[in-house]
Image (cartoon, rainbow, N blue to C red; front, top):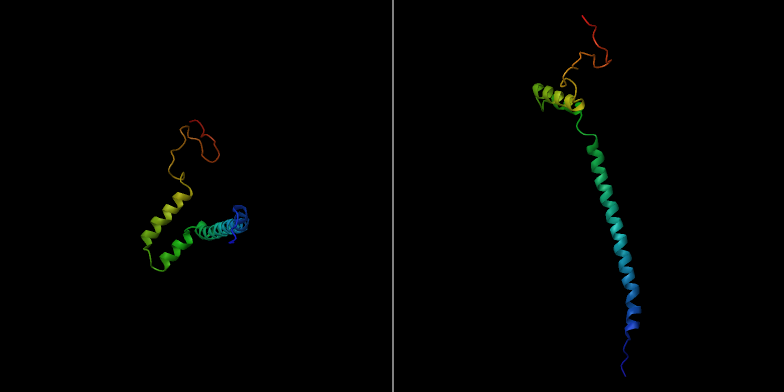
Length: 106
């Protein structure tokens, strides 16, 4: 007489393998997430410094940009560093911007 496995016996044999498969999938997901985080953080750290005036000077010294291009780019950097400088209207009452002192009446 052939032996047949009951449904419960089959379930008991498959359950450990299903559990192991779930554990492997979860661990693989954590590894992939950590690897992605590590790779993207390295790239963002390198670009966090950005392009500096020192880099711009080196380009000019190597002849990769003209002196006119250097001056335009330098002015653009300075404007981005302090956008309010030189572009705001003077106070209406004539007060000094730094001290807030008003000029004497004449």
